[in-house]
Amino acid sequence: MTLLRVFLALLICGIAEIGAAQDMKLISVRNLKKDFKDYVSIIEAHPAPYRHITEKDHKKLIKSIESNIKEDMNVIDFYNLIMN
Image (tube, rainbow, N blue to C red):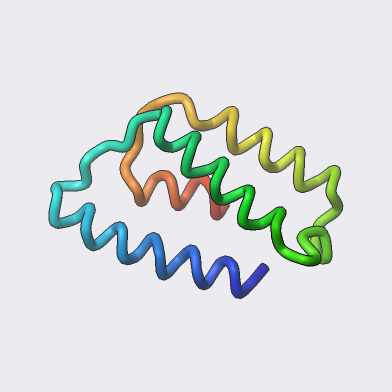
């Protein structure tokens, strides 16, 4: 999970740098949900995705995050949502 967080942080930093150059444009809810779905797919493809969290708690966390994607947001806000 730590390696995944480091990878995601680096990815977000790269995106954030691009976003800063573009005046932190907002990402549509549709695209945020698609990106989050892709992120979850990557986690669940891991050989041991539930090593540090139960499957039940993982699914609860996923639903909680999904329910908070209600409006367009910039990449930093999206990062904060999925990492907190």
